[in-house]
Image 1 (cartoon, rainbow, N blue to C red):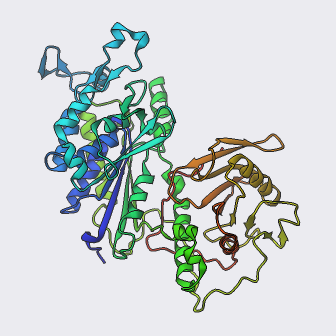
Image 2: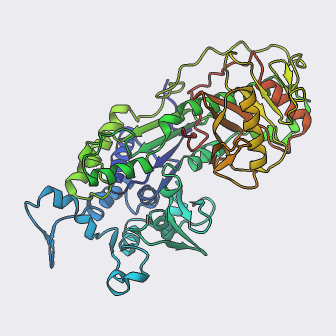
Image 3: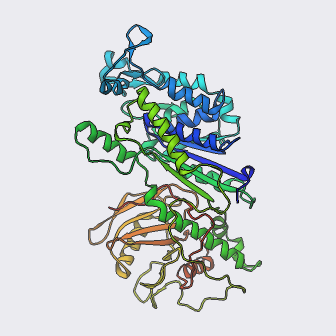
Length: 534
């Protein structure tokens, strides 16, 4: 059954990738062609994706026509006759044509004159004045901020090493912020926005999922008719042939640096979606006068919303089109056509109600709903695991785990840390997990609420454990990778949670009858990326 287009809220995520961004134009054109009257609710972008997002949101003319002007005219580099800009050199060798952008791009960047006068004081190879002029010509800054499309672009603060998302719903979005998002060193100079200096947001996160997800979750949260849709465009391929030359080595290195981890995250998205389903089920069965309804942490967890449709369109480009520095006309046209073809083939028409998501992992049928309120648990208390309490083990770690070999649901257990000191708590958790299960290799969790964000910790044995930190809202999940290469997913209970609420959460997370809730549509990509194997 088709979903009413008026009820659909679509957020589009655009990666950075230099000249590969022409592929994003092809995808957007396919979406607009297959959806008459379509306008995205939000677009988040990084680097060249930020440029495309800004022009889409602030286009002085029809959005797709304006984007075609951007990519087919402004950003395409032609082999021009010196002194005669309108004349092009015929029969330019293909390898040379693909490399012309090294000398500059008239619509985006030019050589930095300081390289000739004061090379020792220069901080970049190019200057980005042409990009500012292109943005001013194609986009209206007032329409960009008040035209009805939420536009979010990311850049890295040089002093804090953290990404900042410039959001036109929070403050006026400037062209300086867009340029900052694409200020990739050492090619482009750092860009000042306000009192801070920024580099390319892709250095931190080249797939700005979190602001798009946060927007969708906050979009009319009390309206059950809203269909939340997320579309992600991936520019860098996960798979490629082995490089056979130094230029190919550099190209593949860049691909690996900026490729997303969405394929690795699909199981995690499913778990987050099921976790939301469990919370919704608990809320439906909880007595109206339960004190848990007034608990701040419970209400925060209840505020999360599912993403009803999740589509990832990955660039299927010929190997000779994967060079992000190739702005030649033939390559740009080929990428635009590839994006249009891939999106059309995959299907980007209006989503249907209840339609399954791509690449959805198989799910077991959810268990029957309880007809009566949940009774007090008769299983072991929250400090007990496999019939043995933490106190009996001489441990102060407040950790509950399902018995080994039990049927897995959305969670494998829960953890309630005693402080916000990450080193102290993660070391204790790793030691405890090593005793009860497998030796810990890696931990991934949300950085919100912790005193610091160390990238690694050392255990008493001298062994190192890697730590991945995510920047997400809410964020009640801890992922642990053991030496047996098995993932363990724990509910993270905030330190300040009341004992009664924490005890209930610890107990429910190890419920042997905990079903895997099948949420309509499947995945909920609540994390930016999943922890990678060490």
